[in-house]
Structures are given as C-alpha cells and as structure tokens.
Length: 77
Image (cartoon, rainbow, N blue to C red; front, side, top):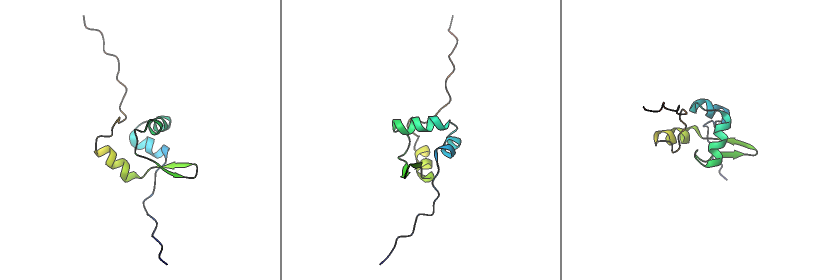
C-alpha cells in the first residue's frame, strides 16, 4: 500500500490574504462570494488559499483585482 506525501506548502487564511492584497478581511469575503478570487480550499469550516494560486492569479491580471477607490474628480468649468 502506498500513501501520497502531503503537500508541504502552507495555505493562507483570509486575514493574511487581506494583508497581501492590501484590502480588508471583509473585502476578501466579498471577493470570495463574488467568485473573483481563486477557489479556496475548505478545511472543515476554515477557508484557505494556496499562495501559489494567488500569485498566478495576480500575474495573470487578477480579474476584478482590488484597487484603490477613485476619488471624485472636480467638475470642469
């Protein structure tokens, strides 16, 4: 009988992902619910992401990538 070796890569949670992306943890949950983040791994009630998938997603242009909110521009006269 052979057993597969567990994947040694650590998974990251919503708080660490929020820090990496520069957004709030609540925004991470909103992005997950909208489907704009890579699919998370579920470990019971925990949600985690593979950091390599996040990096690939960012390199690919991160569809609906988080960005700074735009400030309203003054009206032209």
